[in-house]
Amino acid sequence: MLFWIMATTATAGGFGMLISKKSVHSALWLALTMISLALLYVAQGAAFLGVVQVVVYTGAVMMLFLFVLMIIGVDSAEVLVETLQGQRVLAILAAVGFAALLISGFARSMPGEPIGLAQVDAASGGNVRAIAFSLFSDYVVIFELTAALLITATIGALVLAYRERLGEHRTQRDLSRDRFRSGEDPGPLPAPGTYARHNAVDTPALLPDGSLATNSVPSPMIARGTVRPIDVAAAEEVRQIAEGKDL
Figure 1 (cartoon, rainbow, N blue to C red):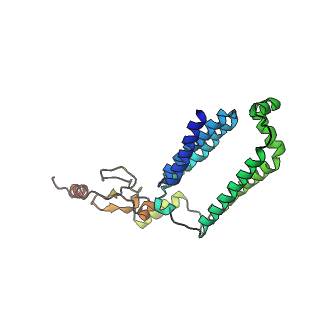
Figure 2: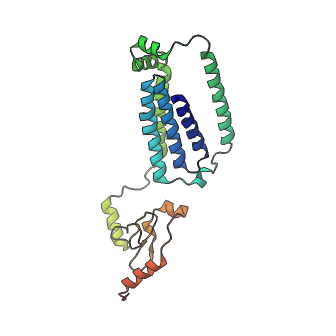
């Protein structure tokens, strides 16, 4: 019964991830699939793998991915843009090749009488010790290559994100002095939603004369066109208050 319930939820999560139009919803569906797989591991007696599936993949990797999507706000139109030509054909070929490898691996492992996880754990002194012995003896080369790959990816990300400084380093004191000398925005920038009856980050602030402070809204929102429209009546009310009229 547990297998059929978890298999159904895992399959539903996979289909939900594929058909969802928003990236955040796809990440949540994928998290459901990972939790279902963790319960299947526990049902098979692999408690360590089940805990790792929840803590590492669902709790760390997927939630980090979900928080990044929620912070930067990826639009569905941006996801559908194919930046690399031919990537869909290559992805299909890679998926077919990966499926062939899985089928061949399962076919080679089917002949013979299955030993069972309980017998392997008993011979090694537990599930964790069995995994550690197999990882650091039979698959030690693959483990070291994976570690080298992760270190290389980290260094590559640092190199790609590094920006060479073309000028001298400007301190906070230098920036403040330049602001006062230029005469523009000598104080802190207006907060989003000031005098606008909204406190959302996509609502531009209104200056005392009723005009919009465009620098109070993040530039990515302006580029995507997701800035909230301003209530004209509220802007007129602010302008009249600034002029000292009796409402």
